[in-house]
Image (cartoon, rainbow, N blue to C red; front, side, top):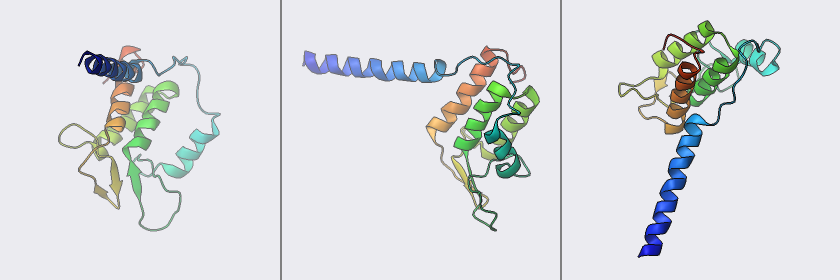
Length: 145
């Protein structure tokens, strides 16, 4: 019985440690004067994947229909803008994410497919967005949230 309890305690500590590391230990500090204008991936996203309202399409085809937007994409975009973008760019991206993906329970729908927002979330995407907001507030990168 003691051996099982020891294993359970170690397992719980590892899980809690992983969560703490994920929430507070994964973002390297980036100097604010490092701009991203030279990064080809950013230019590709801006020119080809961001739609008229600021959501990031996950498909590149220009066919009618098939529009798929994921909270994962928007969360990663927010992380990028927090590290390299301006406060205005971050604010616009966050407000778009909030407007388009946030559900009544203050979680984010994991996708919008063909204009229909999912009624469920993906916890990892919610945590990514929350972590980005906390990091911005903690490092005083973004003042308004």
